[in-house]
Image 1 (tube, rainbow, N blue to C red):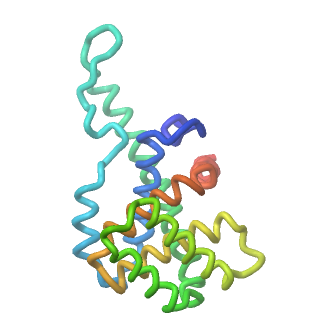
Image 2 (cartoon, rainbow, N blue to C red):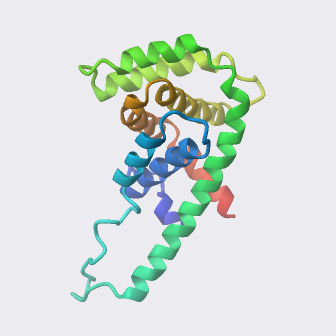
Length: 196
C-alpha cells in the first residue's frame, strides 16, 4: 500500500494526488470560510484517484483489468483517502491554535502578489515561501519545523482564499507545488505513521 504514497523517487501521480487530498481536506475541514462555492468547484475538478483516467487499462497478458482488481484498488484508494482526511483534520485542529499568529499584513501582501497574473508558478512559490518565512517567526519554538511549515502553508492558503475567494485555485496549486517540492517526505511519513 505504501507504493501508492510513493518511495521518494520523483513526483508521481500518487504523490500529487496525496497532496491535493491533504490540502483539500484541510480547507474543507473548517466550515467558517468565505470560499465554499469555489472549494466545491475545485473539488469537482480534482481527480478522484491517482488512476482515475485509467480505469480500463490493459494487463500485460492483453486482457482488461478485472472488476475484482479494480474494486480492490478502489478500496485501497478509499482507505488512503480516509487516512489523508484524518491527517488533514488533525492538522486543521493544530492550525486553529496557530491561526491567530498569522498577521494580516503577510496575508495581504501575498494576496497582492498572487493577484499579479504575469507571475510565473515559480514566482508564486517564491512569494509563498517569503510569506512562510515571515509567519514562521511567530511559531512556537517547540513545534517541529516541518510540521509548522506544512500547517502554515495550508493556513496561508486558507487565509488567502478566505480574504479573496477568486484566488483559491491559484493559492491551492501554489501551495500543493510548494508542499510537493519541500515537504513531500514529511507528508509520506505522516501517512505511513497513521497506517501503522
